[in-house]
Length: 71
Image (cartoon, rainbow, N blue to C red):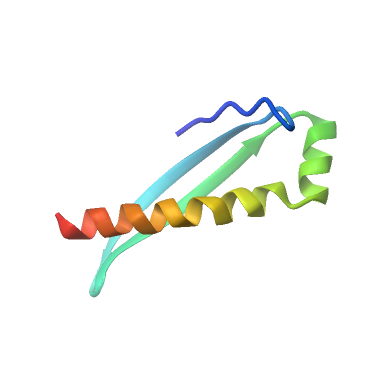
């Protein structure tokens, strides 16, 4: 999934999701790439924007995992 963020900074993150069947259900992993300009990248690193985006997505990953396991 590709995103186009304009505010508070310009960035184009890409989220890839991987599903692996494990003995007790489904494991869902996220691979997150963040493309931005040099100045924006510095401030995003400084304020931990990437880790905050990953945390925000965790709730969605948990819901996705539950939906896949119910099928």
